[in-house]
Length: 248
Image 1 (cartoon, one colour):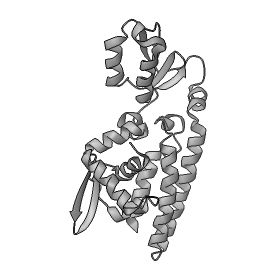
Image 2 (cartoon, rainbow, N blue to C red):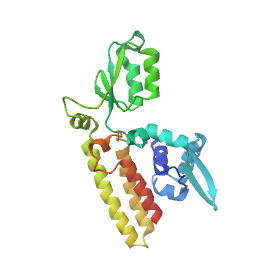
Image 3 (cartoon, helix red, strand yellow):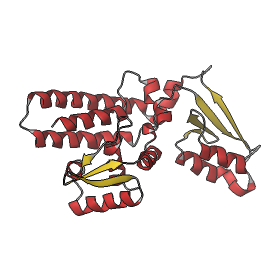
Image 4 (cartoon, rainbow, N blue to C red):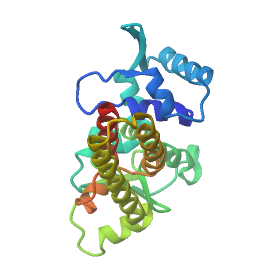
């Protein structure tokens, strides 16, 4: 999926089960590098994929994400998935034992694991936050019985998981990025509630913050909250920006 399509789904992702309808004109403000025709083309593509709904509401073209769209976004950015957002520190280790003839060096299985957002710890070991997905389980049952070991664990008896996992995922950088963005959102909120005449300028600032937030989200493995509980999650920051945008 193209980056602009992922951005659209990110901005449309709702905080709760209620549908979130957004004016297409507002959406264009958060995609300043897209022409109107380019935006319409992306929206029609997403509509065809059944990931969004497009409707006229009071003569205004509005767009909303579907359940398919939410699942699609969660596949692209795992931090949005409920499983990752509710994760409480339990890892599952996927250990390669003997490569089968049909998959020398486990190349195919590695691709599957990376596509499912498993974490490569060493060449022969992947970690997955929480129970492995149905896709991984299916592939293991079909082609790797006796060749791969899977075991859950939570407590590390030797080695510091925050240091090890944090180094691989560069979580310190991500935490700093989210902390900085959170402060910017707070400053924008104070400005918006005190100044009523600069709606367009304010939304342009929101757009700039959203761009930086989106970059961080694409590098978010979805486990930051376990190791940096004091830092707002990227998903919660998206929701804060949505609320801030609605004020104007």
